[in-house]
Image (cartoon, rainbow, N blue to C red; front, side, top):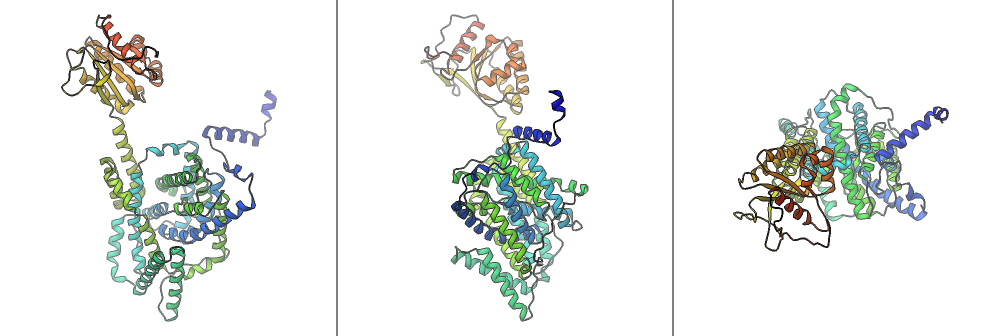
Length: 600
């Protein structure tokens, strides 16, 4: 056996290692492959129709998102093509379409504004995307996506609201026909625009007004038509006509037919170190968007979504984009919904939409030279306004005081500082406030009435037996709550008549080493004062912590009573009997109700 193991081929060893990693992470490559076992012509036609609809939307959206990022417009289309093709091979959703989005586009803009004008955006995008992809892939294998439940949606609402304001502020100077050195802060962009207002180019303003009028008319009266595509087409024709009468407006650069720069990303480690924080923020937004959109579509379509598998798909898509001169990609809400509504049945619809986008950029690239910058800026402003959701803002602001605090901190910091810093600050505040709530266990003192039923002791009400206190613990007893819990129980002990405390831990959760040490200290304190502690109603996980830590032995097995789901009060009844024994009155009548036919 040893001789055979020594001659295992290197590729076999690599496969074994890969299988072990996949088994640990519970991930798989091409998880949707079973959908193609019975693939038919009718399914293909439905996927193709959906792909055509999605590509018609993805093409102009890619242009808009590239403009938001401050990149050449083809970068958005490159990302729409590559991400839509690569992601389905690794993601769990069959309907989600991956590509550039508003949220990630703003972070790209903020990243390069913070790095300064000397940094080559196009030369650095590959390294940024490489970092984003690596962070997402590592996170997927570590199953980080399962922790997203602890991130408040309020953070995302505040970030998107601030991002929308930043987008609008950063596009106004393009509508006015002038440019200036950008900034990563909202206030500085507004100030820079005001300082250069005298340089306004009125033909550009005219094109901007015409574009806005076309957008509003199409959106209002021709809802079945693609508003963005029609607006850009008509604005380009108007700009082309004005050029014949000597009125010129800046346009974007065209892309040579069949041109697509492909190559290894330039990994400048010093620059990557500077971009690491922004890459982490982009990766964080990517996984949040992809999972929230994926779950929404999956619920509507009756599918199930693996969050970590989806994270792997987005990571692989961004990694692939780093080789194809693209920009960050995440889950697109509009394209995913359109894909589902268009009747897509398998991930092949996303792959075909990406191929159609690639074909479009290769054939239509030279026509980009007719797109006027002011018109594109107006389109981006309208897209930004669509991000502001008044209902979500109102909910986040008025739901709870904690939500309002997180919303305001994230929003204000996003307007004053770089957006990646605002995201991390908002998430930190959200988690801190969550831990603050979770670290406040509720302690309610109970007694039993004449019928033997347990009930909370009301204010100014005395115990049936002044020497025994039954304290019901509700909530988490992890490290953040242990000190508060210990102090609360000590306050109960301030009654000089009290001899025994019965802790009902039926609804106590997440005990850890810190809470064990706090309980040890509490037991020691009670014993020094001639008092006793009894635990009742404990679940199996609580018992396991008590036993493994040695706390059970320190407390005494005779003072620990397991709970019973069939007969919830039996543990407290037995604890009361033990309390009477400790006080030297073992024959006292315990009148607490329990069902003798159900054994605990």
